[in-house]
Image (cartoon, rainbow over all chains, first blue to last red; front, side, top):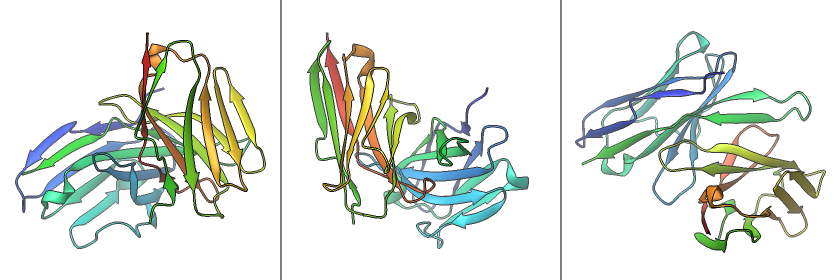
Length: 117
Length: 111
């Protein structure tokens, strides 16, 4: 089974430029997440999709960040314009509900490391 | 507002000995807890979980203990192996969906 795919793996941009990240979840996973992981911290949820609808975007800085999930499969996360503090690893995850516990097990992609100069 | 805390940034353990990683949480509504392992340049991978109705869950060399009254959980790795060297994240959720992560603990297992 293929894992969560993300691209690009690395991106360096100047502040005030825009950038987009792409994620392809595991086939059949209805739930997709974008996380931001700043160096020295744990991943922080930015947005959660269920199929192509947004479930939770309470921690997404909506003045500069946007995300969409096309046809309930692939997703893109965009930052426009970027700030220095956006330097982080952006992780995409997808999840499946475990039959036994009813809990969601999240599978993460390798992430995109963004450096804003 | 750190709802999940891992107070030890790093831990060094000799190969073959026990590694104990600790995690504290503040939100009493959390009812599902997970440990993730992360190697450099890779995403976190699921290791083990525990529901609040249990106080212990075991999977091979990995055991997670939950103390609800103290709002504390720990991950025990016995015996520790050099390949266990990684960053370990504790995560918690209410209802098992939206995860809140700790800052991570770097484990170094020395051979």
